[in-house]
Amino acid sequence: MENWYKIASDDIDGDLIEELSKDPFVPVDSSFIDSIAYYKLAWVLEIKLKNGRKYAFFNVPQEVYEAFLASPSKGQFFNTVVRRNYTAS
Picture 1 (cartoon, rainbow, N blue to C red):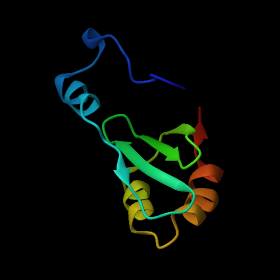
Picture 2 (picture 1 turned 90 degrees about the horizontal axis):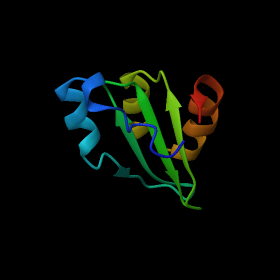
Picture 3 (picture 1 turned 135 degrees about the horizontal axis):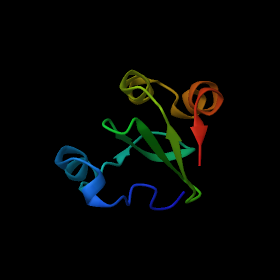
């Protein structure tokens, strides 16, 4: 899973390169999740847990990311929506 976004720059456009060059992680208020990131051009949701593990979930629509950020319980949203509906690596 680590460095899934390291793609040859000749294969992707400038907007995606710019998106991937930023630190996209947003800290969240959760006892389980440390921070989340979303790469809208690639539809990838990345999650850092408090225990240090990182996961990437693929084909995640931006609306799911926005709902995740707005959810009162990030851990519950992660378990009921993200884990059950999207492929991880």
